[in-house]
Image 1 (cartoon, rainbow, N blue to C red):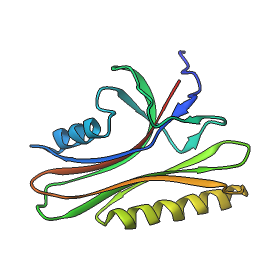
Image 2: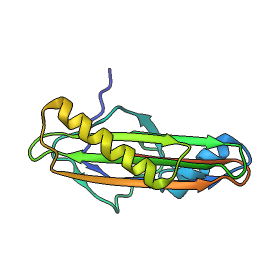
Image 3: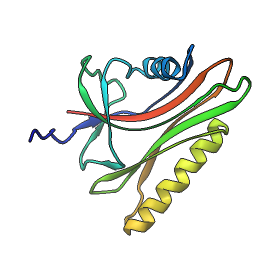
Length: 154
């Protein structure tokens, strides 16, 4: 069995886009979020200990990238959709990632993320030291997608 190494770097991204189909809207949102040319491996919500935040991280095309993400697509013109991700940081151990997507505003999505992070830390009995959130909203024109993600790389 091949094991992936533990990621050492990460960033947050949130983007929205239109397309002719839900799949192309999703792909265009990935491109707008600067993660359209990598292979996302959907992971659950733990940021490895000592992972370094690098907002300028460039990931080689085609890379297999553990990513926590949420997205929503809609074909309802005029509908407001949003996606958000957040990372909660502890003082000395791993972090927790939460993702959300829904029919709401950017601010509502970000508030949901903050609430979920606070609950996740309380459930673990850990002290929450800091939070980073990325969120986006999109008013659908024809077929839209809102996406938020935390890609982690080596």
